[in-house]
Image (cartoon, rainbow, N blue to C red; front, top):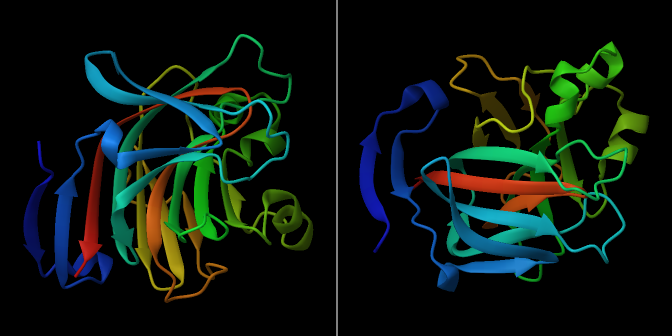
Length: 225
């Protein structure tokens, strides 16, 4: 089944005036696992892509995603429902890391990403709650560097939990990205200086990190045309 496409005109709330939307129907031929294992499954009545990180990749914030090669994305909106579980062998520091990589270049050596840590959303320690959402830019600006050089600038709090569907919407315009969760009208995270700049482009990826059994469903991409 081909992706459905339609035009949206004058969507001024996001600063776009001419957009092309696609509802993405997951097919194995369009999905390329990068340092992850993946399968197409059904959960809670939804067709979803199940993704787990390759256990041989020990570092954090690496290219560990399912790449959608049929999408070339620069500016626009990415919407998806995600559900995160902890694997039985997840380490103590696992947080259910799950999110989206975007503007991935051809060899996966450069991309932007925003992901969530669902276990932090309802933690009893405020510092952990403040680290529920994370932006990073591969390869030079992973979470440890950003947290050290600009504490609190690239991560934030939002209510969320494991084993529940969370709607992620990422709005990208030039060097800015905004993350909205669960149809909230205000963003939970704003990044005003995407590290690869305004003009980078590339594929979209379904991102997970260590200890996560991630499920991705209902992907919709609205590109600025």
